Amino acid sequence: MFRTKIFEAFKLSALATKYLLIVLISKNQKEINMKSEDIFHINPAQLRAARSLVDWSAQTCADAANVGVASIRRAERRADGKLGLLPAVEAAIRNALEEAGVEFIPENGGGPGVRLKKD
Image (tube, rainbow, N blue to C red; front, side):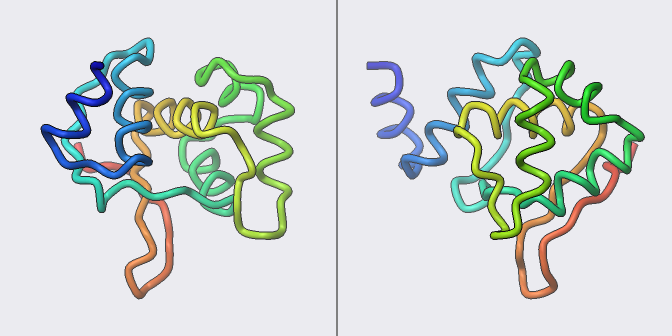
């Protein structure tokens, strides 16, 4: 019922609705100001770069996201450009890194990337 209301009210795609619900339910309850077209999957290189930007080990990232360290390591090793994680796991990792100050940049003609958020 709740999911249907969000979907109808904001006319979000199914992926955007799932991401929004996962983040709203997350332990930090952070506010989301995203449009459905802003939501995209991150890739293994972005995950590695994001961890590097905040100087996190795979274990630190896993702890912050409340996921297994094997999930982080396996996702970063994939060669097909996809993390290969369940949407909830990907959202938890992304949320943890964003809370640490990382901003994920979508493929917009210049290639996907990461950067630190401005203060």
